[in-house]
Image (cartoon, rainbow, N blue to C red; front, side, top):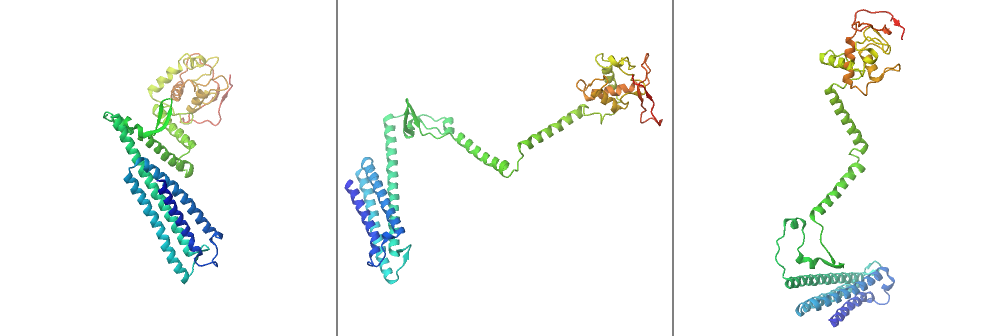
Length: 381
């Protein structure tokens, strides 16, 4: 086999010599190819490819000697010989045609004679084809080696047939009998490294994250079609506020000092009375009958310190005043304050015993037909 390798290398060297020979066919007047950069590049490539062909041919021959029988070796060697003989004959014919063509109408390509250029290109092509053929042979030999090794292992081990479970099928797990094909040759404290693929569900999940990341990047960072985090937060807050308003409206809590109205329902008045007479709330300053005491004013007359309308009373109860009236917004709901306000309005004119003298300014209901041009003030105490 080593003699055959020398024979092949000799043929390739002959091709290389013939490939540069046409450059001197016309005699000394023609410029030397050694001064042409393109020609030098072709020559260097041919030389490198020739070296690669020699190495690959050595690998093929060595593998064939070990793994294939004599008939297969002879067949592969004959195929290589035929390929190299064709490579030798084709440039010669091309050269013969190009010489005649040059005599009739000389041409120059890249500073070289056309015949020289075509021959060099042909040689490069043939060398590449030879390398491809050698690689195919190497792959064929390696596949044969794997098949033979796997067959030997199966015959030696004689494993029992094991039914593959649905979990193994879903994850494409390989049986133990095929571990020899997957062994990468790395052994760490008795733990062998196998070339197992990741399970399909993991791979598909990973591919899905890549697609999701690309879509997310385009939507939120490139085209800006999607809402930003700030916009999502603001939208969520707005939706929550709408739900809160709907809930409060359903419960009757959606009321404040600007929207409160006088309640006439008996249930609301009774609830307001229960709040008013609670010892922990109004009686401490206004007595249970609303007549007032040393602390708080009389709530049954027409004089009011902070206004006597429904809105004014609601506001006073909710926020308190700077003259001793505390705020009840943290203790009572908006609906309860409205009920308490409506009950206080029912105390007007009840004239309880021992009622406190009037304080503040006279308030006349807007619905009353009586009008006064100026208000009567009473000294605040």
